[in-house]
Image 1 (spheres, rainbow, N blue to C red):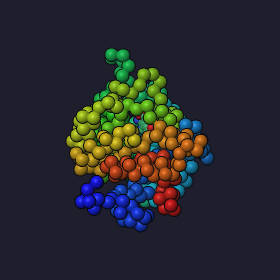
Image 2: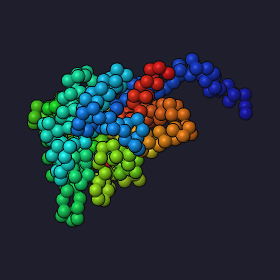
Image 3: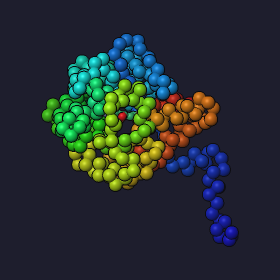
Image 4: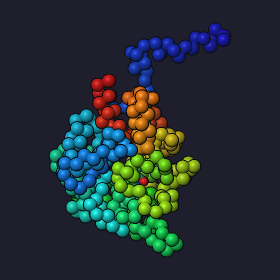
Length: 330
Ligand code: PBG
Ligand code: ZN
């Protein structure tokens, strides 16, 4: 190699931990993390989810305690998923003023008014058929987009009335952001933002979540509403529509296999960008760590850094409490 080229020695800035820290481009903080909680009816319940070691279904009293610990760890917020007592064809519990999310939100915000609480806004946990909206039989069973928009608006208003800080529609219905925005505004909730799961792929990585949320579709799959993993231009189309409809933040989901999509959205849109580090990604790490094949802490922190480097401002992750602890205490 020529002498001139050898004046360039990137290794000079890697010689010790102090200089590496000085030139580090991406930092992850507990405040970047959002912790998903699964709330079930009953009392004093902490029911482990077998495919997601460390994750539990929680009764409301226990969810308050987990929320408190999350808050103390400096985690940015929580997102609630509800598993109702009774499921029915239209998911009535999601818009019931004393439904599972509504009661959980009141209890958590009552105990921890400064903790930021989001509510996942979708029907798959509330319908007896497990799809993300009302069914139509017109051309064989499928989700009726426009009928679902009405009840999504109702659920969002009901969550806002129970005190949630933000709603996060995840059902990939066309027009869901506009419908929810209109419903919230009409009911005096113009200050409640919408985090749209704008780009959500029909992914095999959601499998463990469906155990946790008891939301596996009873027949078929979600490919008529969630996106084909092969498509990138379509992600831009979805995000563009959601921005036009009034989304306050955008999300890409899953995370690890879709870092290119995250980067594309970061470069094209001004809105804050979230990524969902989904259940299957979590389960793979937990399984490999349990048999000693990987160093869990290092792998998790590397992945979280990768999400931020790719453009995410916030990360929904089941690793949030562990990661917050590691970030604070080394
Ligand atoms: C519901 C919803 C799902 C997830 C978040 N919201 C599952 C699905 O679409 O089937 C997945 C989260 C995860 O896997 O961690 N619409
Ligand atoms: Zn859903």
